[in-house]
Image (cartoon, rainbow, N blue to C red; front, side, top):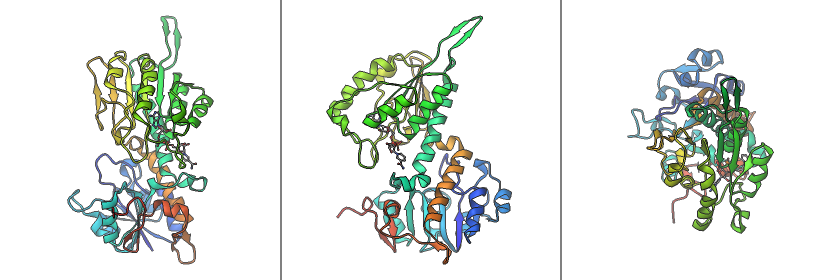
Length: 383
Ligand code: NAD
């Protein structure tokens, strides 16, 4: 069976869905691996490295996709009108497509109509068995790290307290908003750099996790927040009253911060606004807000997704999107291993082909389409 790895064409996407390391393992599973020329360059992987791993390097998406039974992607394939190449039309009917497709019901309908068996890895259930395939975790962890590194670089003083003959530089106050996978890594990174770190979250379990990493917990808790976590481990959308009370508690704290790292998300919704315009206005000149929730609209009211801006009072707001893509080699390495684990977990060794049992919880979580129909409960067109 042929497996195709395409060059990512969406704007700002630097990652690739297979590395030379995973390509070699895929070849070892009995697959014929075709990599589009140049696919790994932005992640530091040359065509030669793929060829050495046993993959065929071919020019163009259509050549890579010809006869493919499996297609690995980072982002959704381009459809007609979305770019210079119609990747979707070149995917053979019946092929298994695996990526972070970010699909809605309409896109799922397109995959079904094209006869593509589409799996969207960001929908993976957060269960122990799925941990090694968890693309959200692997990428969020790197995003949290990178956010602090870029925040530190944009901040015009140092992070650690420095006692020098010329005087003392105080430690930076760093506040992490949202202590999920990205936020916890941000706490650890900011601590390693010597910052004085505090963090907030709404899920009750997060308070202890924050403290166990040596950061101070700053936040608002009440009856409502006691059940702020869904069965899947995510934060729930909370009431406007709760958010107002939370804002009142964090506002005074934010005014004293040098670097604020925003990571808060509510699954399937726009990111909650946690840092208002008034809060930014109260911050010191030279302070930095790093908003890695920018892909979901951002946690800061002044974030301009994709951009870095400086406010009139001298606060820098880094609202770049695709934070994992700012560390492409590491992000690709982990993402590619996540996909390899998924594929090898559902691999029929005898047939040398994938086998995705309908009743499996992981398969149920990620599979959008099967046999020309939309099967995912979240993607079915409204009745
Ligand atoms: P996420 O990216 O959806 O959100 C980031 C964080 O923002 C979360 O901690 C969330 O509680 C927080 N948040 C939301 N609204 C907020 C608000 N108003 N104020 C402050 N914080 C707010 O979350 P995630 O990083 O994907 O992690 C979600 C959960 O899944 C966590 O409990 C994590 O430990 C768990 N998890 C489990 C597994 C596993 O068992 N396989 C793997 C990964 C993550």
